[in-house]
Image (cartoon, rainbow over all chains, first blue to last red; front, side, top):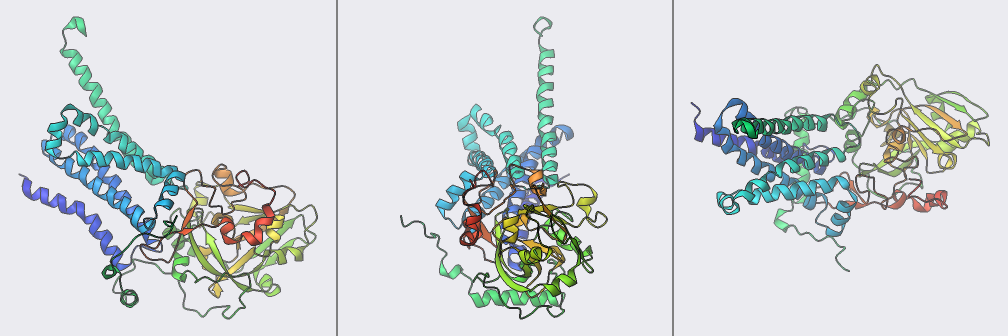
Length: 205
Length: 317
């Protein structure tokens, strides 16, 4: 038997660990010759990873028939938001030193940032509608809104691809995993349709 | 409007006192030196005494503090070895740079093969402190050691038909993984300049930096430095210089013609198709240091703008 409370705590600790390691590296001066960029990339990477983990919960649940995971989906989603927010913080405060005019021009001239901004807006909306109360308040719309996570994941991967000069091996790997995660859902949707069709009386199939 | 100024405030108690900061670095450095902290950072600095200390500083140098040596040595692209800056620094140590021969051919009176050692004896070495601006929007200030490309070219006497100068980098797939696997660019790396750009007094063939020979990852033993152009024009480990009648293909331009032009002049008003070129991260600063505003021709406009005076810089980028 898995001790549920203990597991929850362990996962929580593991999710904060990347941030802790980043902070340790800041203090040990381990971020290399361009520390701001290193910080920025590491936070972005973790945000992307947590987004992928969040998307992986449903397929894992369906395949393993293990229902316990869905409690964690929300947590992983919030960690994606946390790391994305820190990523944004580093960009605005550390890299651009809050010089709004320069930030405006940088965003306007950098297509890759557009996709990052859009992805963040979606993730932000999903994060603030996390509490059960807003779920109740929004009713059916909650699910509709939270389906935008698929769009956010596509925007995030574009944001990753477009900033690189070459060497697309790593983003291709992320894209491949995303493709598998999303196509799993398509298959699932298709299958449930088939099943519900079968459940209809013969004449109406 | 007065809001161009930097408008962020850090409470004074959060600012690390400079002596504390330096002290912290010293403690960490000492820990590294004594092997306490393992090898998180690979610093490629050799302890031999510098080869060209005390060279005269060229009047073409800028008056800005140099970027620390360890940063220049550990933050450089060398795609032949790896697409990753750390790995390429490590892998480039495989290169053998001595002896080294450079072939000069094409539209010249006196083509030939030259030993690097002979070229060093025949040309006046100078220290030139230049800005270096990468297309990836970071920059540094490097005290190069080298001689004018123009002086070398004059010695081989270009013909009047020579309109372009093409440079070819070393091709050694047995030690260069991305040449071996034919990854990304067409190898060997090739770059070129218009003849007037090549003859310009600012254009340098660098053989060293910080008074010593070039580290391998920085382009040893001989590289091109054209300070008003983006970093990728500054081809490393040159083995061949050809004077040509027509413009040759260049590696990055061939790979993505709408992103990397033949001229590749630093221009803050002309964004790369996917990112802004308006500002740059000057390496060596701390956290919260604002970015630097990128200058037209990387700050060398007064020296080089005339070369392009009748050209539309948006078209000929």
